Image (cartoon, rainbow, N blue to C red; front, side, top):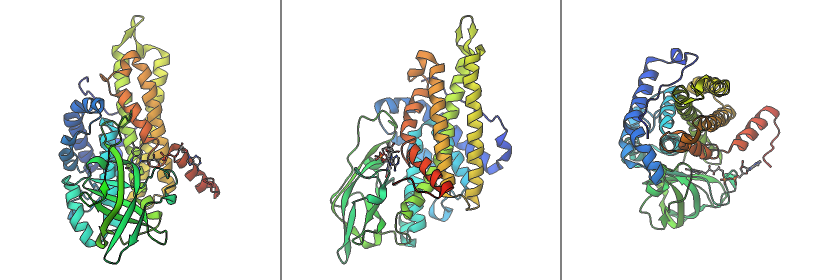
Length: 392
Ligand SMILES: Cc1cc2nc3c(=O)[nH]c(=O)nc-3n(C[C@H](O)[C@H](O)[C@H](O)COP(=O)(O)OP(=O)(O)OC[C@H]3O[C@@H](n4cnc5c(N)ncnc54)[C@H](O)[C@@H]3O)c2cc1C
């Protein structure tokens, strides 16, 4: 892969809206991605291997639990810092950002928000340092967009629970130490359980042959009469709203992360357009190529403003799930369109691993599907503005 010459676009001086802390956190993540992610990521993606060597770095830049209080090992940052970290990581690779999102918003967040003090003390510091890695099991083979239909279930056996079922498409599953698993009790109520690797009957086979998020490990979580101690149930929230609360936090991070992928594609295409000569001129001198670049920077700028305002609302605890859906949907769609246009601007070179664009483009095909598909987020906005449920 070519050396990482990334320069972040900031067409509307959005940096002026950031605090010194925001910029410090963002720049530390940016420098780390340039130094430790860019040189190895293409190879990892080509080999379809999760680069475990980056776990320590992710912990150091505060990517594991950015907003989790410091007393539990988190970075104690605000929501805009969290978003900026996700933006920078996804500038490197959406798969690396996925690993961080799952760890922070889908594993640490529910333990912090819905768990007991003992659970917080036991799991959060180890997850924040990367000593333990976590996964989040909601999706099942027959229940993706409709997780409320899940069939994974647990029974109360007096002094423990017995868990049965299967989860599919689970990021980090092949190497996770712990999994936050959503399952129904005998009354059909959804609860979160912390399942640890090594519990008898728990296995995590890897899913192979992905063309997307190749540097992120994906797999299944299979439970065959797994004995789960009673103290592993998350007691403070149940029902579908509990996993959806985690998804809100992750989707918010994705709204920022997608900007990073888009910025990398735009920056790569802009630089290439000044260097690549055809018909005696740099291709950036042709109107058709300028139209692509001008539209890219316009869309990136709009997405930055959307994410920044959402961050302010999150900091004030005022962001609604529907507002988060809108930003996730818009920003991922923006990024995938920019990746496709940028890919074309590089001609044949655009399909190679010399440049990051094709990898971003393929990664974004997962990002537009997971954490609520593009269409599901549209239905959420539709329901919010009309009051009519068009899901069923
Ligand atoms: C790489 C990757 C990593 C993932 N990581 C995780 C993870 O860590 N944990 C986890 O729990 N899950 C994870 N997922 C699962 C992901 O969240 C689901 O794939 C997603 O929710 C969609 O579910 P599905 O694939 O079953 O598609 P389906 O729900 O079968 O949807 C298929 C199509 O039907 C459409 N559709 C569905 N319902 C409606 C409706 N009511 N109206 C209109 N259209 C509809 C959808 O928009 C979609 O286009 C991951 C997925 C991928 C690809």
